Image (cartoon, rainbow over the protein chains, first blue to last red):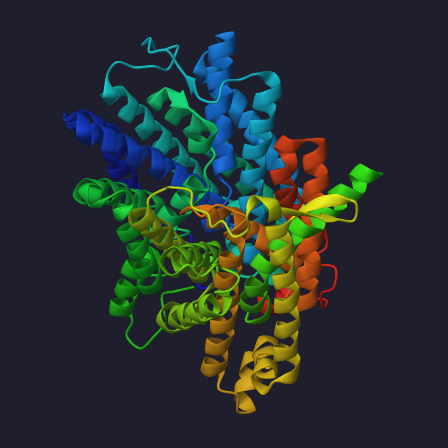
Length: 333
Length: 294
């Protein structure tokens, strides 16, 4: 796999300032309700895609089952709140713990697999969790869709101001990107890069593959779960078909790839392109019949994947690398 | 005892459905080693094609099978020429997402054209909907699709083993550059493999429309099942795929009898366990999954 080095260089401080400005500043700068909703989605999905990227991009484990963790996050906090009155802040932690436990369990079979087989097995994990939930719903008598009563309050993680949600998503994004950054600069980050680029060689030099893949998987699952809780609290309604949906898995992977897989900024950039594009297409083609916007979206996806397999950040680096090169060394790893 | 026999029979018949659906995927994924996540959507296309053939000309899907097969082969040809040709030498990730993108396009295009209604074709009159078989009753449409699976298997096997093109496909599958070196026109061979593989998939969809409803997202429920059947039977093994489909059908039916809500999960759990612990399937060649998909 010809991917890119994990990002870090002198521009780090500048990048951090820019990121804080986007994640914390923008929610205050935007006033319009429509754009606040869009901003919330971009920041939330930016965080989710970054979480995916930790496993899919840095560790090269191409998961298409992250909806399992998203759904677990949404369901854990919602069920705990609606049935036992537990604050969603605590419920989110519970969901993260369950997601990590699930990730730990399934890591045994799925880490034996590579490439498309890993992707298929993780799709199967996502579907299995959904089916098991549907089954459990029947015996435990849980309604199909669950709504959360709109009673604003910080402890209930329900806000009257859309701005607060955008801010919350911004903090979520900062948290995920911060952890990704820390991991990428740590010893584990270099090991992940090594095993992604060549698993056999990494094993040969003594890297404990399972251990480092598992670290990436656990962090990735936990943050995806947290994102699920935030989404549930934003929409205040969940049902199995919306929170356990392979489309979510595909979307977060797609955003990373589109932006630049294995890079720090790629997932956020991918979310910032994809989300407005979806909204715009829906708006523009909404009258052309149900599904019209997704036809265009899917076609764009095919074209982009074919033309920019390294994503926006990757293509950008390629260009600047070419410009820097004077017949001498190639800047790519 | 009676119940077990009944369950086994209906399991095998359901398995025939799965085997038929997986046959084309085996050629494309198992033999040609190309990842195709839009597999289910080609099945969906077949279902709609059969429905409209019946609606417009009155020809039922069984009688119209040759027409549907030719139509599917044409689609497979276009699919290879317009998309796969450009992704085949790229990374697996590109293949996965290019075909996932295509599946989004096809699903939603179907939604635009046909809306989300459930469509089906009635072939048999009420008297003939099920027929007595080994002391019980079986669904006639399932039985017919089982027969189609058997015929498709025999013809595919003959094609793969007895014709030059079939063996050339096998050669390309084993070693692409070596095949090219001995003078096989790889592009042409793969075009044929795709025409045949997608043709079979579309045909399968057509044959299934009397027993399953056609709707835009029907394919997504079949795509992983087909992957499981192919992997279970061993990548590239035609008879293995059929056996894999049958085993899946039987397991699903047995689990469904005990706990109906969990029967769907059987494929997925099986897929995870199988990939992890028996990646070469029951009848596969050792190392096939690594050699082919790197």
